[in-house]
Image 1 (spheres, rainbow, N blue to C red):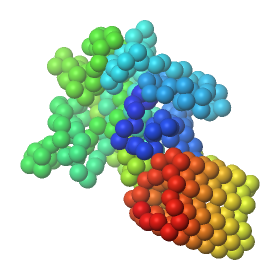
Image 2 (image 1 turned 90 degrees about the vertical axis):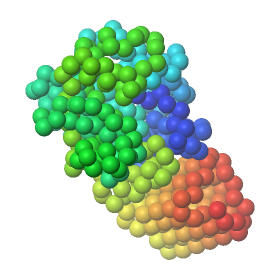
Image 3 (image 1 turned 45 degrees about the vertical axis):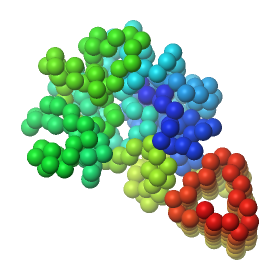
Length: 346
């Protein structure tokens, strides 16, 4: 079995984080985001992984390389033009006669893929889709299944009455296992969506289409700055399992600075006397001056937080400068190289 990670999107919803950094390598817990998916695949025994790219592909390949460092083989295909999720699968696997596990490139989960693979094989399915329960399915596409778990239909953005009538809150989790029998349903080089084109055609042809619930596992779409920050807070809180970098032993932290046990501090950071870091992630080379306060926030590499600045519930991207006594309030997201003058508030 091979894997395909759909990583061709521009990350528009995640801006300004993705203006200079492609979404697949946006830092999550100080690691390129896609490493969490790559490690999850490797744990399930899938080491042959293709990344389908479109936006800034060179930056992604430069960071992830050939995958040898992570015990996998990474290959890259670049779409000639945006092909949609189904079209990208066809473009990458048109000549393959092998089962494919397809992963949407903005999904963070600690789900055991091995269980889904086993269920797919046991039922001899043409396609298996992972489903996850959510509190408010109206924001997503609801998936209706029968008592045996076979997919019956897809309902996009259902209203509350439809949700109550169906009695389910399961949505498409963005993880699929597909047999080569699915490939002929997609025209080569044409834009096609799994949700709107491929999956309805599988149902129309009465092919084997089953579901597998991720109930009990962590799942989050990190497509927005809000969910991106929440995911890292979930890591710090211990709500999700996954490899993270150890706290750096090569940072300069003053003896009178206070850094709690939850916070993750990368290499080369400087934290001056009486600064306080609570439940936050600091990237490489972050400089925090005297009496600065950082809480529930993510600071990317080489940003400087000046004396007595107050940063709470925020994302500050690469090489920013936060002036003295600046207040950065909850929900703030500052793009690369933002500079805030002394005593300002955002």
